[in-house]
Image (cartoon, rainbow, N blue to C red; front, side):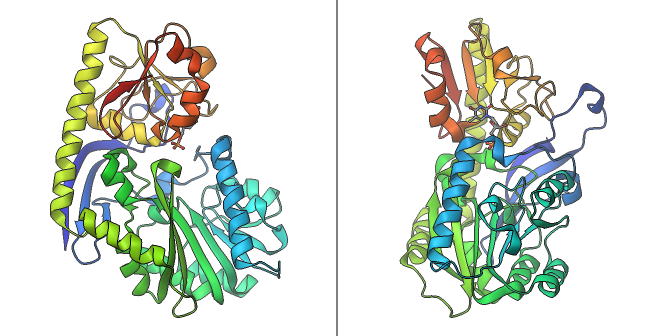
Length: 396
Ligand code: TMP
């Protein structure tokens, strides 16, 4: 049985930055969040059709972020050393390969990619990696097995949480994994979201926010075993989940440690989510009243980073151009466009992050350290950042 605990109102496609002529027929859906009593899975109540989000117009280029590039290079190195120490022939498949940020660290001769966004699929095909321009499911997994045989590593980052049907997803993995193969995937952590009050992890693309508790159950019922968990800092707190076929690997202590931590936080109980919903409501009131009083003082407020996360915040809190003058973002595809739903203009930092800015709302709060290091001049001249994570506060 699924129980609703949070209503974030009408929300648009979080990563679709628009031109003015696209305002009128913008798509919105009800962003409500549910807890499944049986599996303990947290999901959106209403899923958005995948084709609306992941198509040839998808703009999220993973490789534009240097910290993420480094993250995936190190991940590829660590996985190769751990699971293929003697550099044997090793079949690799990535589900959701984006612009090739991860697979570029592997040999194209035995690396396959799956990417439903046509623009990115073309990019990795051009790089020499056979890329299937399709959504991941059991039909595709059968086709790949026929064409390329079984896989020794199946990898996915910030992708499995996008897929609505998890039973089919995990079955597709099980059927394609070699006997000693490993399935590694990373996605935002529910525990970290709940601890930090970072409700902006919830948007159309994130159909689920995973706890280790829920994954343990879902994997098990599809013939897979959770063998290890790494807690990561990326994307505001993620878990890297390692999975093998049943009884092929010794289960690492990190699995029971994570299950224990989640139980002590109460992730298996509905009441915990009700408390979280109250915190989210307070966060909204605090953010709006802080921005309004700064505005009354005559401060110029902008937002730093045009993120999917900030789409959730701005639409839930009703923050538009009357509070935030514009958003600065380094991504060229977003510049000159408007934020989804509340239509705040996006400009390049060169154009917009100048002496006139008093306050910068940290839309990209997950890159706080990188940004603080980069913007010392801003804080030294009295500029302040504002964030809602873990609670609404200003800092410099
Ligand atoms: P993400 O949180 O979804 O990864 O998106 C981060 C966004 O923030 C991306 O559009 C790039 C932008 N950004 C900046 O504009 N300046 C920065 O210094 C950093 C780190 C990110």
